[in-house]
Length: 125
Image 1 (cartoon, helix red, strand yellow):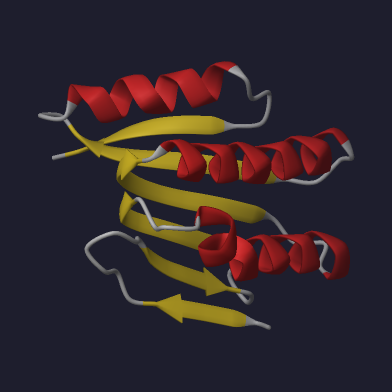
Image 2: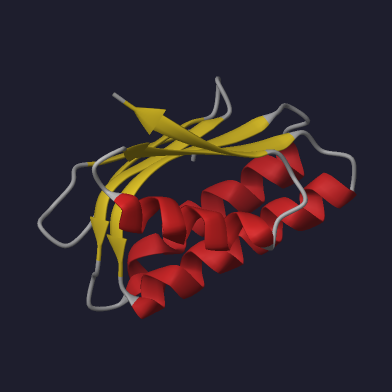
């Protein structure tokens, strides 16, 4: 499972995972009926990447809206990154937002408070 490419829908984000670059990107809204089922292959990809690779892992997020179950999945992903970071791995999150959407900034800041790994909140013009 080296690459994942899932197109966005009205209720799910676009997902791109590139093993070679160590970049996982999620972009759009996330309110699928079953978040854990939808994100299962993403979590598997992260686990496999952190186990089988020694390269850096970067999450590029441009998430606009997350329902409660999606928030729980993202927290699970961040827990995996936190564990890897404390184990000496280089991991990072870049959460991109539009300056006109203050709600996204607040959401990203709340996630960042619980993370000790590099976590940037990046304004897109």
